[in-house]
Length: 155
Length: 276
Image (cartoon, rainbow over all chains, first blue to last red; front, side, top):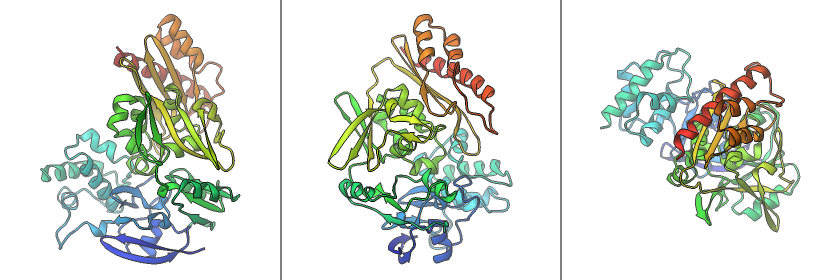
């Protein structure tokens, strides 16, 4: 049976009737047209679908949209404010923290969480913190550099 | 959209959750980190999900009478980052930090993991080594069971139909206890190929092992050898003896047994180095 949910996404409240089996990633992409979060593996491994729900980085392929009822969701589209990139986005750009870009929205959302919890991470802590995000271009070194640069810029 | 349809309820009280669960084909949804992947694979097809995330009183950590009461819906991240647990039950905090990845730890819960009883999950090794208990609520009552009695077999626990696991109770560790959790992980999933939790106090050791066999277990023979000889290598070598080991594409049974002894020695040595 369909249920009505109200979710605040990137600061704006949306209300929709959805089936319980609709995954959050599909709600974001197919109902709301927010195609920043990507569907990579759809098995909770790759992290390309990572968004923030009530401030916590989660894999939106492993959560039903109904679970997000009443909660605050932030996607990659919600990071830049007034045309200025978020410091983590800026650092990924400057440090060339992406090649094909498919994993980038998830990488940035997880990096943002990492820096919120630990503003001055070591390289080992960055690598541990990004274990839930895979990059098939294997551009990890530049991603780690980008997180370091974002940490530095945040000081 | 996953293929099977189901009903979804998010009760606001435990009584309401228990009533919904009594309705037959229903399953509790905690963090969903195991259940949702299983539903995608059609390994689970519940008719109704009863989401506990809005039931008050199921999260958080409180100290009472020399024990720490951890709400079933407390996430792995909350356990790993809890100052109270880091100080008073560090084995649990250390083990939580080794689970999956940060996104999984943000959603996954200690109660969900305990009730799921995955033979490769990390928590069971630590819960056995600290001699944890679980509280199970049913309509009109509650019971407390030792985690070792709760865990029956692969994906099988003592939870009766209609019961909900509401909390985990762990003792406050005495000063001088040393602990460590060491695991060889399957790099794609992060699950333990073998994980060993060791807890040393006053020369006696408790060893919890996960990933090696159909269910997590206490390595009683190894514990006895250590108590008698204080010999880490002899005790560690006894951990896989007589165990019917799992075998899969990641690790054969013989290899798992070998790894179990190696990681048991690492966990014991690390725990001893932290004990005083």
